[in-house]
Length: 147
Image (cartoon, rainbow, N blue to C red; front, top):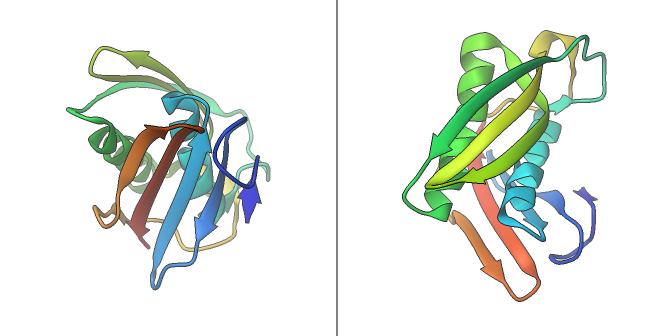
């Protein structure tokens, strides 16, 4: 299922990509931050309906740093998985701002138990076919997570 445009460029979007026993998400956007935002949305929508029953989402702030863009994608996805595993929280929205060497992240988090499950929750990020980069039509990324 895709949201936004059907291909990179223009406004952002994301889609799940069939992948054996894993979750694979491809996302795109006009900026790196929009592409990464769409990747977070794609991961969340693979296992929970963020519009279902989220009561009084809490704000969480963090900074994520990495040496390059693909590592930044991994670090952001790791943070989403970590918050789900340790606090039972799911980002129902995310704002990303670039900072030197990384991102400033502002999440709106809901309790996972308050959201309708739609699939298996991710357990870890893999490095298999990991990609984040800028092309002529904007930014694209792909990430695979173990479920």
